[in-house]
Length: 64
Image (cartoon, rainbow, N blue to C red):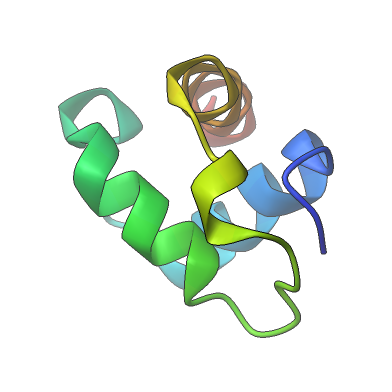
């Protein structure tokens, strides 16, 4: 899984943290959760604010 796999990451986070409201997450926590996902294999420093915003938005859509 790479940073560009926005929807896969969002689905995985939704499955792993079903009781978390993605609107309440700090980006530092989101970044840490993504890099700790099983199968995540990308440069940790590439997860900037725009990528994290896209992941958060996709997670919000997944949670609806």
